[in-house]
Length: 192
Image (cartoon, rainbow, N blue to C red):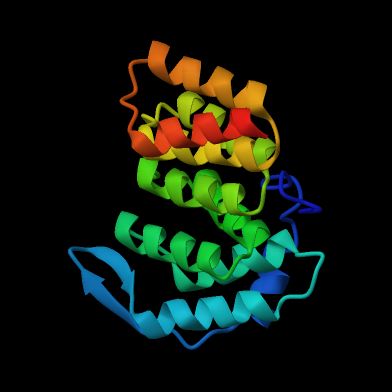
């Protein structure tokens, strides 16, 4: 599990020291005055992250992201980065990247959360998926069918059928549209 996920503010005193050790070759270009990183840049970030050995150092991950995205990434780049980390099946890195976005007050939307919640579902981490649904509500990011379905799937994979049904019920009460995937995840959770 992530040793220092919540140290966002207090544990980052060595950021400058770590930043000096984390130099990456990145190609930047302008994209409507937001920083954009080419596929090569995202690949360089992924390679740097995957070379980190557990337990992950929050400072090293944050310093790498600070270096590559000094002005903050745009929403599309954020989605690509989070999606790439999730595809590499690195939930800890994906969560750290999301924490970095939150800490730096970068724009986060339901697509970003959906990618991370889906990664939680694939790793059977239903508690983290529910925490992210809660974080979305606190941050006033509107949840949708995809985020709820992914969280219900995480509960289903974790054998938490009661929690899956509670989430489904909250989804219906909150007037979040459900679809076949949502119903299948809820039914599947009851089967286990």
